[in-house]
Length: 211
Image (cartoon, rainbow, N blue to C red):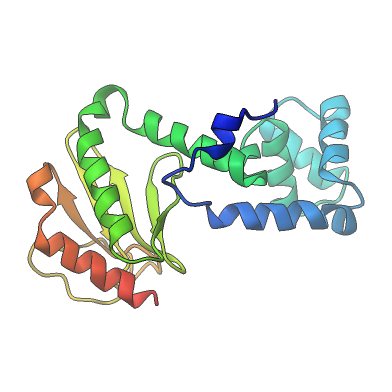
């Protein structure tokens, strides 16, 4: 459906997830690497493929010789999952919905805290951008340098990419460095007053490390 002029002009507070560019590249190369375009694969799956997601992946691998990554991605797209990553505007529209659902129901009371964390995160540097996923809101510079995660109904974990930094004060080591995860530390945020100078300090450190 064509977007209205209002929808086209409204600028999102979020940035386009790096996964969108990756998806666009993947779609552009699909014909060359697999012999079919995305539209052709989706039509084939709809016509001849199994209905079950797991069976569909196996069918694409065994009957059509696709690797695991291609089979999994096509199976999900055929089920309508992840299609928003094929277009920047579709992603940005979906991102708004991710956040609305993330902070609804029992976690609705966390929304003011989230809004404040997002504001602080985007102001840490001119290259900072927030790219929501379904359950977390990562903050990117070149890579993810911080992450907003509503962990419980009463707490948001503000995560940071700080490498092997020694935890001190309110900073909690997540074990992420040992596991080679990007997010290595977190600070628990239960109220607006928890977003203090200590939080802003570690956010700036994480942002600067990703220069």
